[in-house]
Amino acid sequence: MQNLHSAGRNKKSNHRHGVIAHLMLLFLAIAYYTYLQISEGQEGPLSFLVLGLFILVPLERLMPRHAQRILRRGLHVDLLHAVLTGLLAYLPVMLVFPFLEPIRSQPLAASIAELPVISQIALAFLAQEFLIYWGHRFSHEIPILWRFHSVHHSSEKLDWLAGERRHPVDGALMAFFVGIPLLFLGFDLIDLLWLGVFNSLWDMTIHANLRWRLRFMKGLWVTTEYHHWHHVADKEIRNRNYAGALPVFDWLFGTYYLPKDKLPEGYGIDTPMPNSYLGQLTQPFRLVDRR
Ligand SMILES: [Zn+2]
Ligand SMILES: [Zn+2]
Image (cartoon, rainbow, N blue to C red; front, side, top):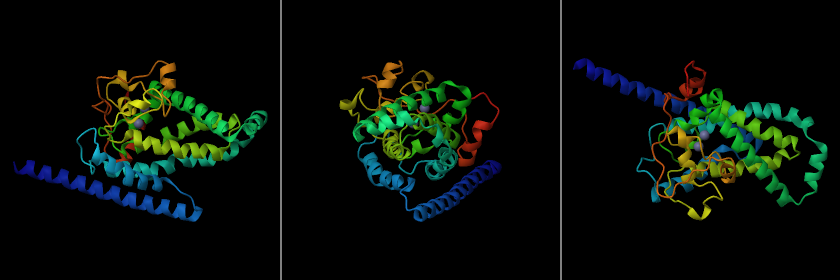
């Protein structure tokens, strides 16, 4: 009995030490990010966090889909993902992309530049959505890619911050998969960056714990309910709804799923995933069958 008590105490104190270590790491990451933003005068992921905190968190209190605490278990780990994983994922992208300028097709770039700005954005958006659909689908269907993408799917509670949980390799591969063809087609990197900002904002919303069904957007735009289905543990359902914003690609390629009479629940994966940030970063490299 005595041993049981002390084992329980040890477990609690280990958990407390883990949380403190994460918070210290988080503090360092935020300090580093703030330094980067101030020195480069850019708006970065921290502004998304602020937006999430002031818009999505109050909305989650008003209309939650699932009864769950705002300060849930693992929130600090997802916060760390939001701040640090973005940087880890985009470092290789920032390093490689400037060298890719020569692959840009000049004739295509010239004909795109002749189009009205609104058509350029619409075209870039459509091309980007098509690439996101296939990049995302491959990350589910190719086992080595699923190892990394399963980190994103390991959240058992979805909320405004859960979608930030992502392995940097998953993030970087997706950025290359989407960015390189768009660059080749002649789109401007700055325009693509704006699309990325818009994507990140909506991405946070579709993971939030919100019960709105937004039926008027059904089939036209990816909603919270639509993406929550993509996060259920059932593999048959999880391998659907790959679209980032336009469900038309799911519909075209046979992976559209939005039942009228059921609501999504039971999120996560059926293989183990460590609770710690470093554990989640190293998990894809462990030699186990992750399918
Ligand atoms: Zn997925
Ligand atoms: Zn997701």
